[in-house]
Every structure is written in C-alpha cells, then in structure tokens.
Image (cartoon, rainbow, N blue to C red; front, side, top):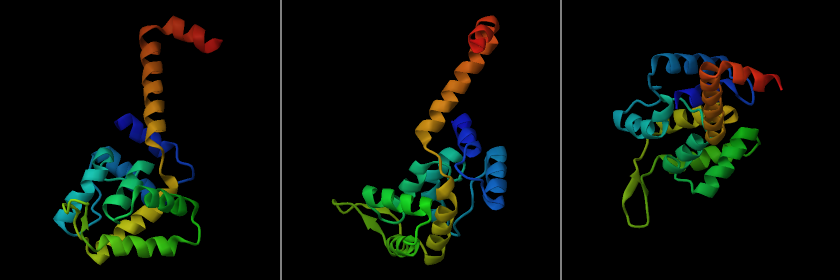
Length: 171
C-alpha cells in the first residue's frame, strides 16, 4: 500500500501546488492524518475513506467515495463531479452547490439507516476545497497498485537473480 501511494504521489498528471506537495510529503513521512475538520466525529467519518493514504486525497476512487458518502451523490453523479473538477470546467459552482446541499444533511439509505452524518457548513466547505485542489492530481488506484507490484517484482528479481535480470534488461 505504501509503495502504491508513493507511486501515485510521484506520477501526477500535473504538478502539485506547493501546499499539497508539502502536505503529502509530511503525511507520508510521519503517517499523520490531515486535520480537515473541527469535529472529532467528522474527522472519524473522513478517516474511513482516507485511512489508506494517511488522510491525503491521492486516488480517484477516494474522491468518488467522498462525493458519495459526504455529498450524498449517486455513483454516476460522483463520477461526473470528479470529471468536472478534474477538467476544471465552468460547472464547478453547480457541483459545489450540490455538494454543500448534500453534506449538511444526514444521508439515509432505502431501509432508513443512516450512512452519513450531517457535516457543518464550514467543514463541508473545507472538504470541497480539498476535493477541488486534489482532484486534478488524483491517480487511478488500480494503476498505482499495478506499478507497485511491477516495481517490487523487478527489485526482487534484481536482488535474487542479478545476472538473469541484467541479461533480460539488455535485450
């Protein structure tokens, strides 16, 4: 997992701005969660989605999960919202309004069970700002894990069979 996160942080489609880059280095080095919220229950709710990456939004799947769990979007709406934020189209204000409306009310499934708490407006605003900053740089988790596996296998082959590895690399 750590290797996939580091690969995702290094292989961004565009350069990270200084804030996200410094934050991602600090989080991956010290393993701390990002304090996005003021409430402990809100922080615990977000840490479920962001626990794999120490509170940092790294993967596209995490962005979609936050849109569905916090903003109350369906999976299809979350995918469209992710694409809108990634391409920075003019519809961002509409997505923000939808997200804010969904985040400040509790979400219930068809059986009536609560699956999301109601976030405060200021926390919802901070979460959306984080989504807007991190979405263009989000990396596909499947690609990151595949690259990590390939890197690990190559390193293992090089360590245990250096002559064979060198011969194959030269071809």
